[in-house]
Length: 236
Ligand code: SAM
Image (cartoon, rainbow, N blue to C red; front, side, top):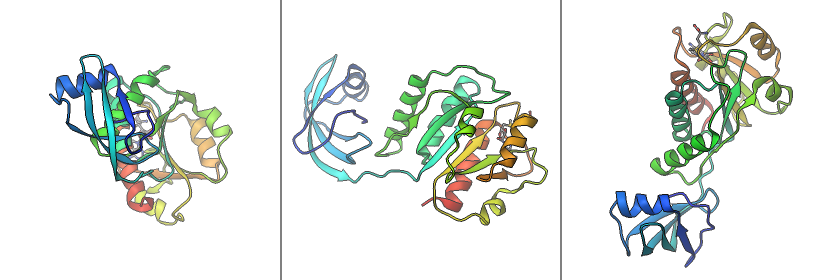
């Protein structure tokens, strides 16, 4: 269970109403039950339910069961698509070990707004489900052009583009790149990237154009494929 609270021996941790509903209502747990807690800072801790109520509850922390595992410094930039598919991208990005999830508005982005709080809650659920000890931050929607204008000199960018005639197949394109250092993956919207964006991205020294095979993938499939490829070549 993800909590905001600091975790340490004998630490009392109050439960939110939603957590109490999940633990005691859905999972049918009660006083004495063991629960694993993490907060993105202190690793994973064993705790025990000491008070259980309909609107809340209390856990008492016992001992640490795993150290903090922070994923490699990988950002996933993607143009939000339909709600369910955007949720899917966030969930898979957490499972695949992205450290930061960044929705971006591109020239052909289909949605102009996102519910950042909803997506962050999805990220928490995904981290809980996959036994993570860290929840990546889901950022507010920002313009791709603004982000590129201030792009960090040392962060490499895996620019996924099916229309890049000169783009090498994914594995060989990344093969020549030195491992290590911070990275980002960029996935476009349903309509792909505009010519202006392509030109801008091709000109960036940190950008590496990558094709993910000969077929056009849906953006959510492309995100999973790109994360898999990155983890295979450069992940730990
Ligand atoms: N422009 C395309 C069209 O309308 O025919 C479709 C774009 S695709 C659905 C969405 C995004 O997924 C692309 O912008 C790209 O980032 C990524 N993508 C899909 N297939 C890809 C491939 N074969 N190689 C690299 N990226 C791909």
